[in-house]
Length: 468
Image (cartoon, rainbow, N blue to C red; front, top):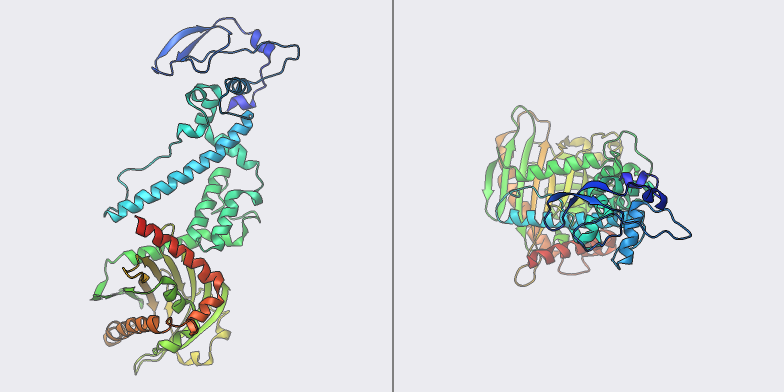
């Protein structure tokens, strides 16, 4: 890219050069090097050897850099390249990003196909390759000074272009903010990482961020860690004991030396995903259909994807009722995991919530839901009749702060409470959505900003699922 920074050579400079210069020319067809003498004469872009060219001197001589001379020759030969060298570099930068996005999409599709065939990863890493077609011209440009500059030095071109754009107008930042607003947190994280790479500034881990980044995006690294942790917990079954494995899968694990107990549940439901989402999102209605839940309260709703919840649950005598406070966050992972993920865990700072809990909470034993707990909702291909289907998976890490939990209580949760909840959810899905006038369908219509956003994403995924 030194050509862009050097003083443009004038016609007089070029005419003052030595008449004969020894150099190495590479044939475009054979690729062999050969020593040759080059004299200052015009060249033909369609020949095998690209030689020096000096335009005829007119009364009004114009200073031309070598890049501009190549561009001028290409125009004269009716090539498809138009614009000045900086304009071409800017256009190349735009197309370069389009190509990389296309390649990323192809890689993700190949990985998903590979996963479906039973492999956990692609056999070999895939590197980005920029097709010659995206350099705007045929092979003559690739052999020219301009073509070499474009192919060999893309990072400086990108850096120059992106630094010229104000941060608050940077397309990648705008895309990151939009993805965040739509609940697509991993896509937001990806765009912010790309912006960091392009500008050479770590916007993800810097202690002091520009105001244009915003406090929401500043929390993306921690959110990504929690998302990754939840997905790992759902997939890792090592050390778990299986209590039931038919239409309902129930698993259990105790963490030795601690008071933490973990539970996993998985089942398929013949219902659209948004119906199951509504049952969990409209949490204040839970006590009306789950007889084990004595109270269900929404303490806060910072956004359509976030809420803080309180629930109290009945336990058999002689155990006290147990209650929990959890922060829940929904994340659209359709692009990465083809699912909706809901992360749940007890807030680290409970001081702001203590005064807002029901008075009956004083009689309950407080339990904590630990990070890594989550709900995964994955839409499945519809039934032959067109009925929506979804696979729900749940992992809960609970610390009841009881040193020795009797085996009888664990058995009650695994053998009695879990099957009852599974059966109850099936009944609610059939009975509560058969009429638009019922409570849950009404709630869904009242929140188009949430359910209207989720439904098209699900339909898009199901369309791809049916196609391939």
